[in-house]
Image (cartoon, rainbow, N blue to C red):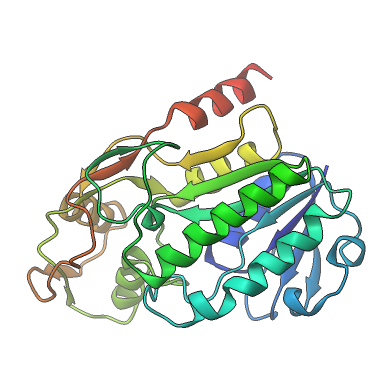
Length: 279
């Protein structure tokens, strides 16, 4: 299959493109700039995806759209989330009015807002940030558009990704960057919140396996399926990578909109991966 991946040279895009290519499928990699590398097996197209009148034709009539592109994903109260929302809806609208079969979009557990416990596709969403509000609105709009145009709808709800690349804005990327700069300590919260952590390579693999199938659709958690205390996971991350940096506990307050314990229900992704193994 031919899969169009937007935001292909972003933090997530680079690994997801590789995982899709490793699965034997073709990737059209849409990148806004050429500042970060993309797997050489992909066909890279550089430019503004929102400025194209007929993206389906422009990108070579892909079978699947995997929409990852998003500005300021780690800056939860950036005005860009609200400002760009109509552009994302318009972009997806152009595809649902084409001959494409599947629309898959990267979501976030921040759509849920403050919640404690396991999240599934029926968990109510009450987002507490501009980022969560915009993602949730795009999810609702995309689902309606796909339903009205008989397209397969996949909303890939991402959780907390663990990777040691210093390219990116996650706490793990920041720690890796600080280690490479020779910092002795890293300012940290108390680290008491419990989140669903998933390793970067596993995250990319789960996304790739989800989009190349269409038996399990709708909202799909890309997750580990269990919670772990933030301090425990970060300390383990430091140990796994043989870093010398140490955490400065209590330097920052916990974010008031972060849940105390939250994790994804992994029933759907387990089924997808089970079907993959059978294949």
